[in-house]
Length: 356
Ligand code: SF4
Image (cartoon, rainbow, N blue to C red):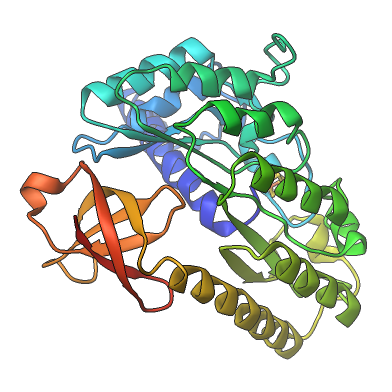
């Protein structure tokens, strides 16, 4: 996955599971004994219980967790210790959940996993050279009524040509991937225990741009990792300039307890981390603004999500490339509908337009 933002989704799911555990404890009246119970085993079939997080009031867009755990050992990340080994849910179960969501009006599905493209690699076979994840994408694509499919977050390891090719024949796959890079320096990637080189990451992005012209790529980047020198940081800036990410979540490295990186030599002073954070943000933001500005005058299809969070009088929706568009309209009529919007203005990171 990468960094905090997407882990929050899993934290949310985890909170629900914890509540269920506490409920069970109450039922068993364990609290009367005064003993504390700490269950650190992976619950059998727990990858299937994630579906319990389906909310009562569904939007047109929903998340579906397809796996739990992660077998990677990124040196800054605590997930492998807290979530256990990778366990994928069977394709049939996931498709059943997608159909139930569809029956409640959902049109857009985001498949969630810590390393989503490696879904099922330890449990399910390849078929016709296609990974279990591509098989899953095909199965979800076949669900009538689901119009858009997204996934987050993929890892460069296992991002193979079958997944790139899927973007050429599965039109419901949105033209956007969130693809964590973390660093543009091979030396720092090695220290992060991210087992790929910068060139490999760049090559995958270029293949994706060829497979789906106009695809938006966003990423996660950590700056100020222990031992990061100015030249490592420059390698990150160079890669951002080369790949022209649509946006990037930039994180200043901070120690996470019980991770190998927290004990590494070469921890950087806060002011150095802050300086790099700001310099990288300047580059990222300039590219993002230019990409938004280039959309002014175009017509974009959005899935209307309802009233905008910042201005309840207006509506909001997302393009396939995951850009936010604000427009006027009747929330009761338009929420959950696909609409064509003419983009009239960009304020940097938000687009404004009118329904046509
Ligand atoms: S891939 Fe790395 S960052 Fe993502 S969950 Fe696994 S260990 Fe953590």
